[in-house]
Length: 362
Image 1 (cartoon, rainbow, N blue to C red):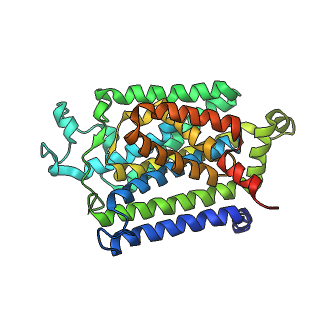
Image 2 (cartoon, rainbow, N blue to C red):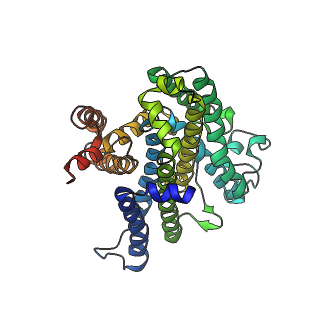
Image 3 (cartoon, one colour):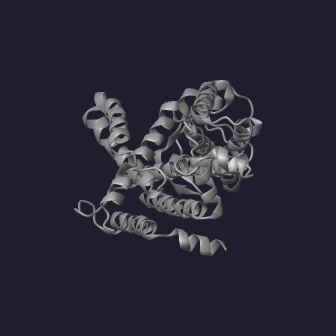
């Protein structure tokens, strides 16, 4: 049954998207590792890391498009799940530093030694093992989303009210993680990572491997999301998005569908955060900022809702523009981002993907 659903879900657009992801996942690493430095076709290591960050953002955009584009759940707090996944991976990377830290303490991270902590907090135990950290990457965001979603959807909170509550959630987490006594590094967060599974994070081959792993995760996340939206569950999601009251009247447990998709989306966002942290080298409370969650929605709107590939493309395009304009015109970037969202809403309500679909010959 599942292979049939996946095969049916891979239409021409989906296949093309996967081919592009696979091509980038192969050609960019080969260009970096095999071509001589200075060659026109050689991709420098710093660009590999930058592209890896963009790919993580594309995975995050998929998680939003799944719930917003197909189920009508506009979350303005998905950055919280992304950050929680990042913190889970960051805690593992901090435990790997050991005696190589500034203070040479094998048990406590440097920031805990600086703050005169005497012992490792209970919630840090287990993060010296990669399998435990990977489990927490999905479990912590998923559990938070499940509890939050259960309370919200059971109470039939929808629309703008749900969006405001999700924004309040990520803002509350941001304030909590800023506090030093929480045990997550406070304002500075977690940084100065050394290696991952014994491989130096500064090594070119490690950065290339992380990029490839991110590309594989993007392809896997896309296939999983396509499988969901092409299934009976996906059709029910669209029915809830378009006429929730009618779906409920027909006897469907709307809150169960929303809860399942919202939880899966949070886990996907957590995976994106876990891949993001070793490539950028830091995770701090700024990742919980409500502005970040609003930006994610803009990526999806620009690329095109309810397309998945459009959401991923929107994340890549907007973040490339952000990288360029924050260097060239840093004082106007936020105005440009807001203007872009307004223009897309007015002129391209279906995003770039919708424009391409209109121009596609019948």
